Image 1 (tube, rainbow, N blue to C red):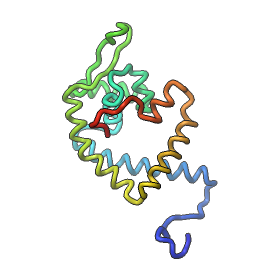
Image 2 (image 1 turned 60 degrees about the horizontal axis):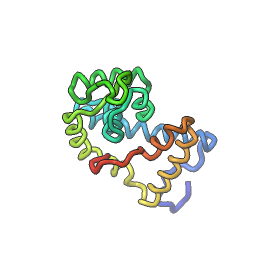
Image 3 (image 1 turned 90 degrees about the vertical axis):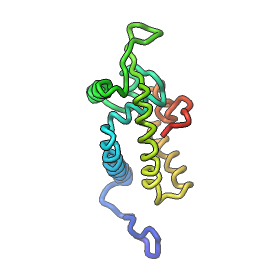
Length: 175
């Protein structure tokens, strides 16, 4: 640690190679963020997986289960259980695609949209708090670096841009 640094509690020497330590920090950051968000979401009857599925549907519109699983970075088994539960709660609906009757799509219901609006008002301040120790410039730089890392992880070119950009133009109420 550097003496006189206002961030003297930041560990500069650690037992792992830098890429491993970075991966460890990313994991720890996301796990702690999810825990805080999960508490908030539980007050609304949602798990983190259900919420991610719902915000993906809000962002991208009606989706097949395959596309939703890719965009939400969720395995199909977890997604199927989440969607079945969301359907039972009236938050999403499953229906046949209007363009191809062989495809089943999932869509957000008006009740689901209303719940997301309520949650958005609570989660945005949480996201600001999580980033409070970073300047706007640091947040922008970190965003760029994480996009670069994620670009290297996503092998399917068809999904890469959608995931990185969170794709289609966002409605004004987007998280």
